[in-house]
Amino acid sequence: MSPGHKKQLAQAAVAARVCSGRQACRALGLARATWWYRAAPCRERHQAMVARLHALSEAHPRYGYRRIAALLRQEGWAVGKRQLQRLRHREGLRVPPTKRKRACRGHSTGWPTQATHRNHVWTWDFIADATVRGGALRMLTVLDEHTRECHVLRADRALKSADVVALVQQAIAQHGAPEFIRSDNGAEFIATALQQWLAEEGIKTIYIEPASPWQNGFVESFHGRFRDECLNREQLWTLTEARVVIEDFRPDYNTRRPHSRLGYRSPAHFAQTLPAAPTPVGLRPPSVGPASSQPITPNHPSD
Figure 1 (spheres, helix red, strand yellow):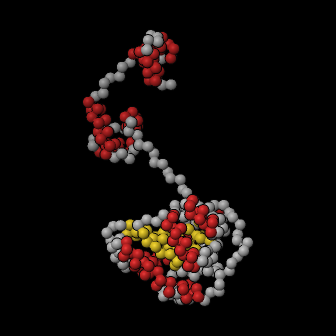
Figure 2 (spheres, one colour):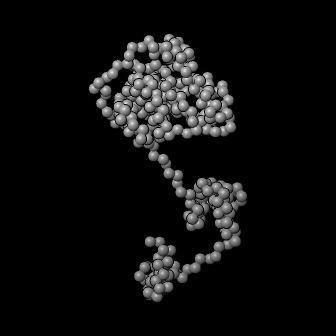
Figure 3 (spheres, one colour):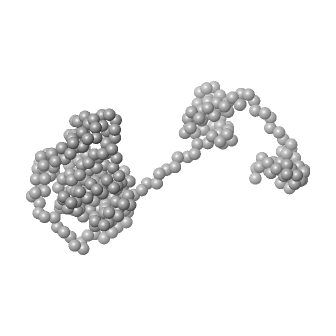
């Protein structure tokens, strides 16, 4: 207990007429000199510095005592960092530390694998852009890693997990369900509702390592081509216009654009040459823990 705290307790006991000041000092082990000490009133210059400290702290609420001290010195005030730290603590001007967000990570329910046939592994991700008027554009992309076909390319102002489920359901109804689906650890892809829906559909999830986009290389490669050949060439003024332009790009990419890794055939032409996708029964890999516990097979996408 500090002498200042002891003095406060002694003053409270005397004010409540519990005992005298001498008895309170003896009981608390407080020096009589400390009991009688009265701090000198603050000088006018010190009061002016405290007022300036309040003004700077209000103008820069996220500045710590070191930056505030630097600003005061630039204005000619002789102040030390420790002195300012004590003053800010006394005046209630301390800046609370920033709370670090806990990184949420999805759990893989299947072995990380490379696609070997149609509907073996799908991959999905988001790409962001903006209309000319400044409105946000968020686009969901769903690809088949083996055929490189783009099953979903949907633009909206915002897309939530329920929107993702609805769009993927439409793709499954048209192309069939994948065995695995690969994604990053975005909030939309690890949402509880989406996880439940994937489990009901029997689709296993493969989550890449955080901050490792190269592990989802097929969709990253597609986004590079999409931005270079569509988004950077078009002026999208409204959401409706963006949807029309983007939906025109998707069938052109699937049916006409030559793909170097497919022998310069289009994804749709390549898919037509493939045999029917196998239907494995009881041959799916066992469940594993978090994505970080298994090395991801490197992919080698190309344009």
